[in-house]
Image 1 (cartoon, rainbow, N blue to C red):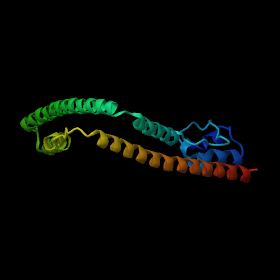
Image 2 (cartoon, rainbow, N blue to C red; image 1 turned 90 degrees about the horizontal axis):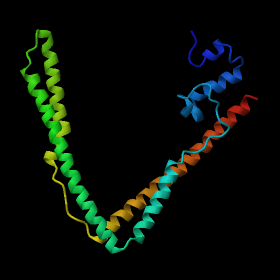
Image 3 (tube, rainbow, N blue to C red; image 1 turned 120 degrees about the vertical axis):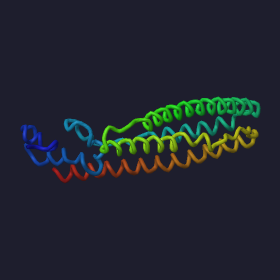
Image 4 (cartoon, rainbow, N blue to C red; image 1 turned 90 degrees about the vertical axis):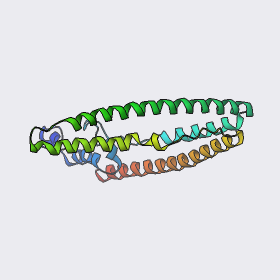
Length: 199
């Protein structure tokens, strides 16, 4: 029975080692990102770098410039807006968390009341109880321990925090973009070397 890679030989679509090697190359090196693609999709002559980090780098630079361009009054307006959003978000999350805890507790109470029909079912009851208790502990304890800090930052604190965040983003995405460009060049060299070896 043929594998996913040998099925084209089995069906008579591939009749030489060169084409088979190129098809198998999807599972290695430069082509690993193509392993889920259809085997009919050809390997490109050249890969292009993923532009995610380049785009995020540009966004971070743009955001940094916007922060420098904001007046103190505009920052004060943002501080007030963000403060109100944090309060509303906290209220919403706490309400949703309480509703979740109530659902868990209702299910737990019903499981605790359930009488297993045989001794073989007792482990099932214990397992269900443990699962619910773990979920209550994991999913519902945060808001009981956490009291939000609703202090408003000063204009200077707000600006400095945003500048630091943007600078961190610029450094991170710049490094990742350089790595992506280098990795793409290495992938392209790998493909070039493979194609040359098959001539």
